[in-house]
Length: 305
Image 1 (tube, helix red, strand yellow):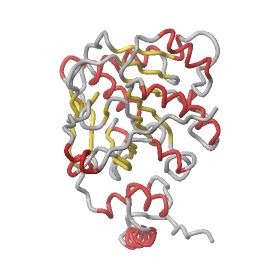
Image 2 (spheres, rainbow, N blue to C red):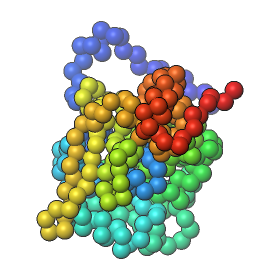
Image 3 (tube, rainbow, N blue to C red):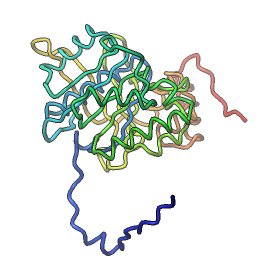
C-alpha cells in the first residue's frame, strides 16, 4: 500500500530562527546519543583497550583521552574474542568497574554464535540486556562476513542498527583492517556512519611500548577544528595496579604519518585515502621516504592499470 502521508517541510529562514539545543552526548565530543560509530585497526594494535576505555568512561560518567561523559550511562559491551580471565585483567587496569557496565563474553555465552545480521540474535540480545544507551560491539564472530565484502549482509545488520539508533541508542562497532590496512568492505558502508576512527601504531613503536596508538578521525560529522586532529595515546603502569593514560594531539609531519602507514604494509593509495591527500602526493612521500632510508628494503608500489 502506498504511503500518502503529507511530509513536513521547513523553510531555511524557519530553521535559522529555531532554538535548537546542543546534541546529547554519551562521550563528548565523539559519541552522540543515537549515533553509529566505527573503530578499526590491525590485529593487536589496541582496539579492544580503546573500546573498553570508551565503554567505561561512558558508564562511569568520567573521562578518557580528554573525552568526557556528562553522566553515567547504561553500557553493554559485546565481546567475542576475549577470555573471562583476560577481560577481568583489563578491567582491573581501568579501576573499579561501574555497575552500569554490562559485558557479554563469548566464553560465557550459551547457544549458537551471535550473528547480529539475524533477527534471532537481536531478540536474544534484547531479552538479556538492561536497555543500554551505548552498545559496543567488539565481536569479530558477530561481524564476520557482515562488515566485510558481503553488502547484503551489511544491509541486514544496518537495518537492525538503524532501529537501535531511532530508539536513541549509540553504537560503537570494532572491526579489523583489510590486507592493505584500510577499512574492510565496500566504501559505501561508511555512508551511514557518523564517526570512523582508525587506530595505527606510531612509526617508532616497539613491543615494550605496549598499548601506544595513533587515533585518526577519517570521518566525523559533528567534529570540528582541533577535535579533528589525530591523537597519540599511551597506557602506562600506575598506582595500585590501575593503569594511566597519556594523550596529546599528534602533530607529526605528513611524511612521518605516511611512513607509519607504509611500514605497516599499507599501499600508497590506501595511505592517501587515510591521510586525506592525493595518490600522487602519497607516492611522492613514499619515494622521499625511500630516498631518506626510512623505508629500507621496500619496493615502490605502482598503481595497477
